[in-house]
Amino acid sequence: MVSQAQILQWLQAYATEIEENKAYLTELDAAIGDADHGINMDRGFKKAIAQLPTVADKDIGSILKTVSMTLISSIGGASGPLYGTWFLRASTAVALKHELTEKDLLELLQAGLDGVLQRGKAQLGDKTMVDVLSPAVAAFRQAVGENQATVEAMQQAVAAAQRGLEETIPMQAKKGRASYLGERSIGHQDPGGTSTYFMLKSLLAILESSVE
Ligand code: ADP
Ligand code: MG
Image (tube, rainbow, N blue to C red; front, side, top):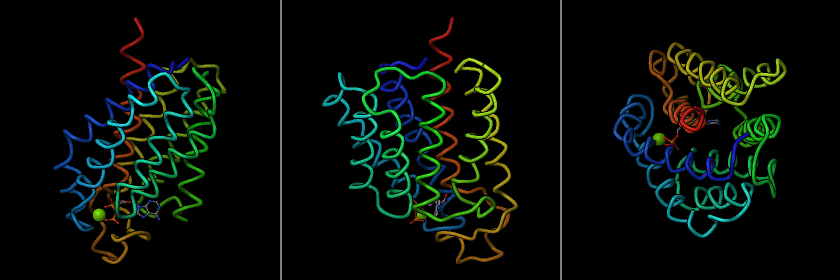
């Protein structure tokens, strides 16, 4: 189970993780993009966190929807609409819920991925956040199918996300700004995949910190 309070803690933890890694994300984007990914994400999530008090007693769907709207209106570049879509689809998947079973969380993760796929039209192997999200959702689905609890399933998802992220290094970018570099995009880790890995990792950290 994931509670509404844990979702709020996760969003706060993710915003902090982004803030701490702002320079790192920007450095990754400097290598194959325009050096704004850390700045974009930090600006967007600071604004999203500032909105959380207005939805502190609302259902999880409303909280995620507020994050989505804030990201869409405040992050420029490719990542604003993509993260905005992830949170919008995630919010719809868990509308009106105050706690999530592992099946609810699976639906949330799958809906977010589907939204990013439809919006960005990237395929697996294009060196984008999809290369992190997609194996994470698959691993989570498998773990839930094996009746693993939410924390264990999320551990599998984060491990798969980390492998997916490492696999972006040798890929040639086929979508977004990095694709303009052609073969010169090879040998660098994808910035959006990195921020996506942090998103999943910070959710796991919150789930683990509540289990004793
Ligand atoms: P921009 O590229 O507009 O400067 P950001 O630097 O904030 O935007 O984000 C770049 C990241 O966005 C990339 O590292 C990649 O993971 C992700 N991205 C770009 N295009 C797509 C797409 N079509 N589908 C999925 N993710 C994408
Ligand atoms: Mg950029």
